[in-house]
Length: 173
Image 1 (cartoon, rainbow, N blue to C red):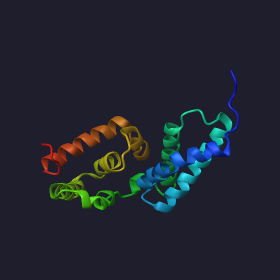
Image 2: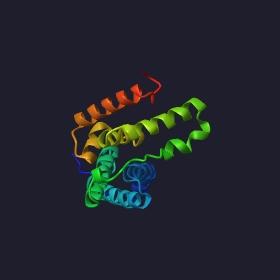
Image 3: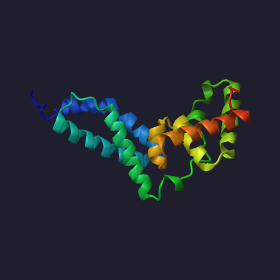
Image 4: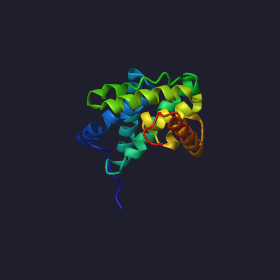
């Protein structure tokens, strides 16, 4: 069995082209700060370079890179006083608002109801719903940021969605 050698610059450039944008966007959606996201993405990609230099480029790295980026975001948030001190609301839904040109009037109305409904939820339920639905984290990743178990995040999301449905902030009843 041979040990992989250091990664070539060309191989690393291919990895960068494949991963750099989504890593930065993933960090931006968590941190809600473009400059902080750039710093986190650079650090994550530096760690990818170090890892590939030691192990070669053949090993799949997307899951590893997502975990590294999430942990770097968590570390940055913790240094700034913790995620629980950050307010995700008022969630302006900027990603959803940017896509409104292609939205039907019904979808625009639904988005407005969801934004209003989120304001009625307790803080941790708001955070869980926004992190899983708007940011796109899974329950474990959201739990890592919030200091909760994945099961607790799942439960908070379930309860929050039920409250939103009852308040008419969802298409489903």
